[in-house]
Length: 243
Image (cartoon, rainbow, N blue to C red):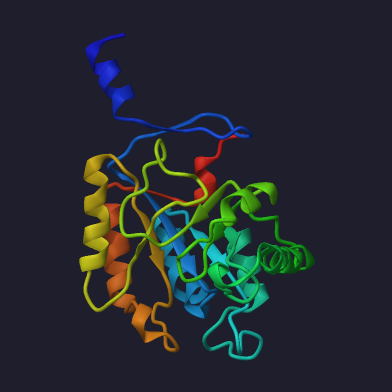
């Protein structure tokens, strides 16, 4: 192999799963894009922009209490969630009620997860491959439980890049991107310089009920167009799996 060929291999990240084939990803210009909590503007604003730009994304869904069922100014309908799936986006599990795992027993957690999977099945959505820990923190019992339930990835919120050759696939770090400026976004992209993959987490665009995780629409659009202009590869978690 030539020296240049060796360099290409050295600069690539390999992801391996017992169930899935090997997939090579070039670091530095790859991000995984995720959205949490089934906010209505994910379908109304974010998704059309992502489709225009040719980006993929993972949407972590829950029936956020207390008013997911009635407050459709804030939360998506199941018809909108199905439309995201039909458009090619990944729909993934964020528990049924956005319940924090550290405060519940393993059997309760499994019930929360399976209740949402049953809802997915009832509305015609496929079973999830990715899981998002509500609020970010995991629990010690979670990785083996998620593996047992058939998940391939689980995302926390930990402010650093994902290093697939080192990190547990059930404890993937990610950066929450929100606020009135692009400092979180820029910081997340800077982590790729070490060879990792930034995983970006957005909530509402805007988020009227949870202003501490709000992202202004014009800022979100600016950040997405920056990724396009700079030739980033913007993926969903399932894009990292090659059957």
